[in-house]
Image (cartoon, rainbow, N blue to C red):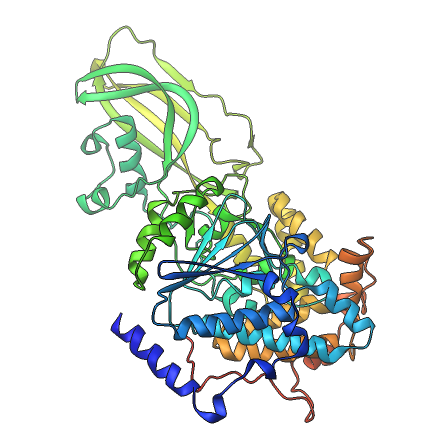
Length: 565
């Protein structure tokens, strides 16, 4: 904590140098209106301060005046030694729906381009302030969190999602590009959207199945199961074949009792952590995520039911600390342990690759008719020769008694089990959206849809076809470049892209998209150009080209504030 305080003191002293001094009178006139105080409310308890976005009628959409007030408040709170941490939340049913693009639309139609430029500059500077903030920051993402709303929350230390949270970056549907730092955080999503599965050795499968069937692993023939594999099993979540069948529960080699069990274990999941290409997927399609899915992909750090938020806020309000670990502990105490729903786009399974394993155990048995038994395959099994099934609960099992030669009362009970390795959604996302161009992404999705009969592919294609072709290409390049850039470089580039996008030098897609989606609401935008084939490289390059000599680039205080993220 001493390092936090020392750094805060250093920054505070540097800000009072003459060339860094700022005065409220130097702010734009629109930032000094009476409504400014009501758009961002302030709440203080103990050592915390809360900024409350208060435009519920507009889903707390950000205006330039709100960004100005937020920046002023956050700077003063950072300099105040009596304040330990900062909270941001929204009023009504939204945290923040992003920038007020409807106001920008009207300003552009009125020829007030300079006001739009000021909005982007002020917003991006505040996002950089948040990304370099010394004190712990807690964003309570209760409700709609989209576009710029994600930008003013994700750079903070803690992000609390709820059962009311709806996250999305829908900019391509409005002829724009995911901005407000989106190219930074979307390009760094860890690769564990949904449960990750690692290729597991057959002996590990057999050992886990043996444990579920209460079979002695050492009595299973043809397999060697070592203690390392046994001790390393993670049983936090297990999938099952839903097949009724007689299971042999062995106590000794020559003694057995027959009982019925409805389930047989399929496999053990393990998290797979690496950078994924899901950022491209979210950026291009505008797919919505709920609070649980935000936890699953690392966009949120904690989860709490909406009904419990009052307890969370009350607990935070009693803290007298600036220690992030204490704040984290308090959030965890009132948090909920959640898993993505099986219907989630991040949890779905598709192609199942099967292998057959025969477990054999010898035992003595009398009055048992010789022959074979085969279970029925549950609904959802598609037998097309490749063992393709529509859900992990489906499976196939065959069991039979086989007599032992010269031992009339001894049999071997054989369980022919088809083990499956489900491919989680993240692997498909990486395979389809890991292409270099938008055209290749379309081709990959179409090929995947044709080979897997997966509705997700069809849905993703539909969203892509509804988006602006120019925005798709611009956004893909933005995410790809952002993966190798720092936060300040991402914001500087996005500022350049935003100003070039609203200039209408290349296309009027931004105004057309806002008109179709939010103003006239006919949902029939006329994109220019209308197809991917007509989007040239020069058009895309124009968005990334430097601003004119009369147009200054975004000036971020990188010498004073080095980003922590």
